[in-house]
Image (cartoon, rainbow, N blue to C red; front, side, top):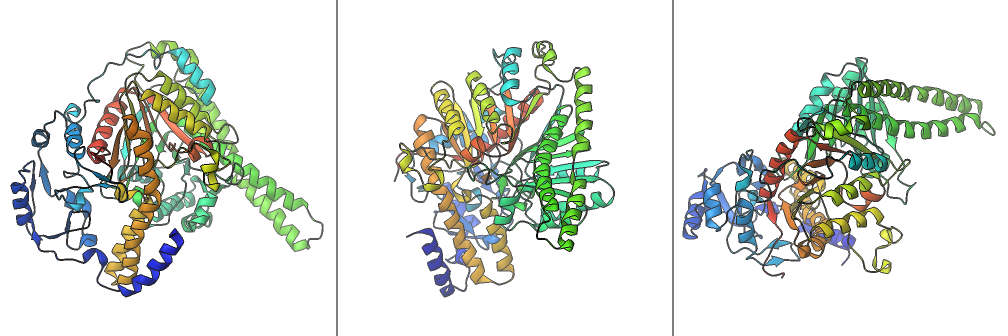
Amino acid sequence: MNKVTFLLILFTSLKAYGSPFLAERGIFDLTSESISNYYLEKNITYFNILHSDNNYKINKRNQFQIKDWYKRDWFKLQKEYDLSIEDFNNHYNAQTFNEAKTNYYKELDFDQKDRFHLESISFFKEWGGLNHPPIHHKIKDLTLFSKNYHPIKNNHDQFFSPTFHKQIDEISHSELSFKNKLKILEDNEAYLKKLEIIKGAKDSIFMSSLVFVCDQSTRALTEELIKKAKAGVNVYIMADQFISRALFHTECINMMKDNGIFVMMGNDFFKYEFKTIYHSKKLVVDLDKAIVGGHNMLDADNLSKGTDFKNRDIDLYVEGPLVSDIALGFIEDYQHFYIKKAKSLYRRSIQTAGKRDIVIRQQKRAFKRFQKFSIASYKDKIKALINKERLNKKRGQEEYQDILSSEDQKMNGVCRFIQQSPYKDRLNIGKAYLSYLDATNNYLGIQNPIVADKLYDKRSDRPLSEFFDEFGMYLQIQDKIFEKSKTIPIDLITTGVEMTGNENIAMLNEQIRDHINNDEMFLANYKYKSIDFWNDFFGEAHFENLINDYVSRDINVWTHVSFLHSKIFYFDRIAASIGSYNFQHNATDHSYENTIICQDHKLNKKLDEVMVRDMANSVPLIFKNLK
């Protein structure tokens, strides 16, 4: 049965449901006390239940599901347990938390169709498939959790070599700058920081996102942007035209256009094999502070707490000379699309044959009005800033030898911003990654949302949409990862079974809450069943690829409880890349992307903790047998 037929049957059959809500069917006759006794009988004593007045049932995944699931605060539910790390490790005969998890799941069979482990012991639905409550607190002793995150020395043949970085400069069209101040922003932190610096803007705001979904959080941010524009701040916005229109996410964009904000839509989708989207995500305020990373503008990112079944995402806040590179990147992309549209408007304004006078005047006025959208004047300001930074020895190859040989400076905000723009070079991030991978000798950490690209032996086996695609850079990076897996440990953190339908799942969950509150049970049931559809649609290939291509090569695969939306490559725990760059062929071979690659001691200390906590909040994809 194809997917369309399935949806039609689903839609008509749901009329028979009406009410009650499907997720609430069953008998909720289990109490917290009876469940506590159940665990005592199983000799599971590494956590305590901190609430005592809730009713549960066993759901189809053999989990304890609390009554009125969609009326609950799931993050708060997760906090109502007390976990002993020491007892957890001892219970599963392990030295580390990750080893303990692995010891549990490796003895279980894995259901390939439904994509979860077949557990004989029931745990709680709010744990997202984990055998412990999610870890919310910052982890202090990483060695208790992962054997791969022991203290390291900052010695490396390549990453502190001026020759290596000069080669990266050439292939990536970037350069190193120094003494940048960096801060990781997790989930809702990124949104709050964006609001903070937007509210403080004095002169200019540059902001881009794949889309601006006009939900609660994005609408609030849009209103702040409009306030700033009306107060005289120059506000420039970029988003992808094709995706925004296709998914009907134009309301906030139109609000901006109507209120004095300069909006430029990326529209190169059809120019490069029908796959090029404007996926870069950046915010630059007053040319002296910036945020770059994986966040799009929607509630699933902006309101996320990390483990509450929304998006798990990472951004990077930057102050220092790197901001000039980020701003220049925004300006160049903006001007590319500005010039493209200006040429089109100009051609219309001079083609007068067969047109009425009123139409000619309208088209000439449209071209004249559009000229004020240019951002070119800021390019001169940025160039002047960059020259000043070079004179002050804050950037440039002339300083590489001194900076990279100094113990005090070589891990002090040494960063590059790489922007991938197809009109200039649509492979330059990948080229840099290949060089960094070549130089990686001890460890590789990756965070990537979905492993969607399947390896086909023959072109004729490919679906039509991918028949003419070469997958060139994607395959080069993948081959390099596979080569490295033979000699070094690799941790790949990606999305788990409940969230493979991407942001759709978080959005559907919120819609279901609204339908239940409004007593719209037919719609609530329809949306509830749609979750399975979308998780299957994206999840089948995702898990098949993970098992066939990564687990089979002894790469440690960790499937997060939320939609893992962050994009991180962590080379030897020395060079860290954080940005918009998915490890997926549309990103590696076609789209507008950007990333920051830094060597910074404080950043890495924080990123170490983030990586370890994200593994702790993931189910390891390891099993006894496939069923």
